[in-house]
Image (tube, rainbow, N blue to C red; front, side, top):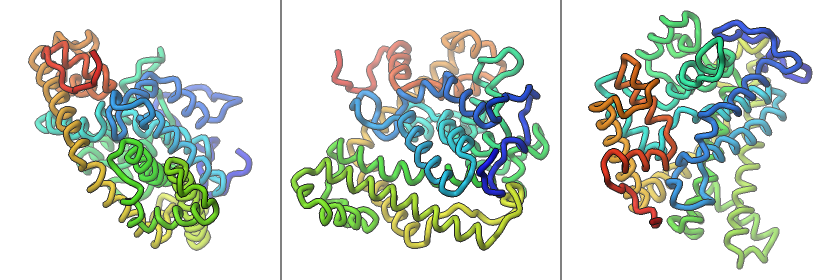
Length: 383
């Protein structure tokens, strides 16, 4: 693939797939990865899965799908400037949340608690299960049979016992780096950072749109107020247009972080001078923001946690979401016949239940909960 830096992931040198397949020529291996993800059932479900606000709370709030698209855009922009593999970055970005439960992190926490006696639940590992096993689209194999490079990017974190199990199943595979302390490829590192950049800015946008955050609160955040002041200096008329002022502020915020990451990563790559993509894995993380931007981003995260994610209105929805997931799990576990036939037939009933619930959209989970319990968990404002 022409134009790539020598330390980028070259699709012609991919470590391959779990099941051998003919070359996808004229596509590259990572274009095939991206295309399979986009056409998957799990990807379509993301449109009705919570980012921060549950789907019924408004049409313009971000969902897991729009978040994934925004991460892909940020990632591709940085990859192009760094001469990394854009197709691989896009594939990882589009797949990184495929394993998320309905109702966001509240759903994940509840499902993890339910699964504690059976090995727990973690959405990064669930995303891997989706692309390795749960998608049923191809005659020759389960899952999407993605490349090693895409799969290692999807598995962002992994507890050691899980990594040990993965290593037993796939020696030298994607679990290995969690045991020997090495890094994933640069494209995976880049998506991890694009994810953080994206949700910080966009959660501010949704928080203000919801009325739970105010523009005045943002003035205490250096990473935000700097760009608000710049926007007002360049466009004084924005002072009376709060929505447009916020949009201009966040646009500048995102751009500045992208260019900061590109500059810092370029500096680190120049100093490390890795020979190729494999050499990257034996070095400390190379994709990073500058120390000042990391410090300011940490302040922003703390603010969002306290002012938005722990806001009483969000917490009330979170409590309902946890109850829905818990009660769904208990209902299916006690009556596996309520599951679809392919899930009910599996020997590991708790994991089958977790897989089924994790694959639900917000609104399907609410409908199933109502069907099984006769109760309406959320006040949706709809008859």
